[in-house]
Image (tube, rainbow, N blue to C red; front, top):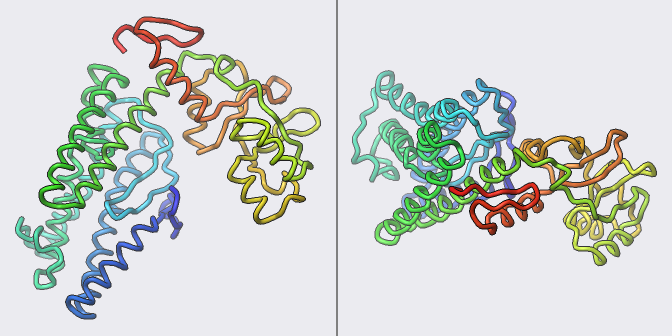
Length: 372
């Protein structure tokens, strides 16, 4: 995730802090210091750190359950509104998605029970309105907030766990595509409700509502892309007309190529036409600033670009784009020569074309079912 800092690894998963999370901690500390002095400031900071450790435990509940079903989890990012564990793929079996989604809230319930049974915490709903009050025991506040986190995450809206649980329940009867559409719609209406409540009571809910609305739409698009790509040969969807660069070419030559084309990614190939890297607009501009126009393309390109054969399905390219977070997937012939590219923009354009087609129509490899 952009603007996040890697602070270490836990059980093979990178733990990242978003810059807004650090700013949030600093703001809370300064506000508490001004209102109550250094003691209250440090107490509030310790409580927030403990709270976000509980959030991190929540995310690792998802992570460990996902791994049990063979879903890799590269990283988890802490934000001011919670955590986001990145899964390399969306589980396609409803039961698996249900268990992965429910694992997070169950961790928070377990933490609350542990605090009550072992430490003797008191669970009083009134403590929710006093989470910033140092007069209330920190343990009591942690217990009730963990229960609140579990309950809040059960809201039926992406990316909340409740939205994924809802989709898993619907998918068992309707299939993943239709279930995602319904769950995303419910999530977006829920976001409108949260935004309205935020206007009346708490402005923070407006921010959460915007995040939920956008995440619901994004989730629906990802699933639609995956389902659409299943029956499409990659050769029917790849880009075949593109400019290439040589690794020995200078950056100023790449800039000239940028002006002459509308490409966002430039394949870097050797003398045999085999892909050895990719130079994107971002890398090109950075190289121009930092290395100068006489630097070689090989110094700025991204290497280890995933590749697939031209006889595979588009679904394989889509999975690689997701799992590797790659800017593009190379399509090669049996001799390893580059013959095409698949980019996220390619898939987005395909989805727009499919959605613009009349229901029941077919054009080339794309079709739109009558009920879609």
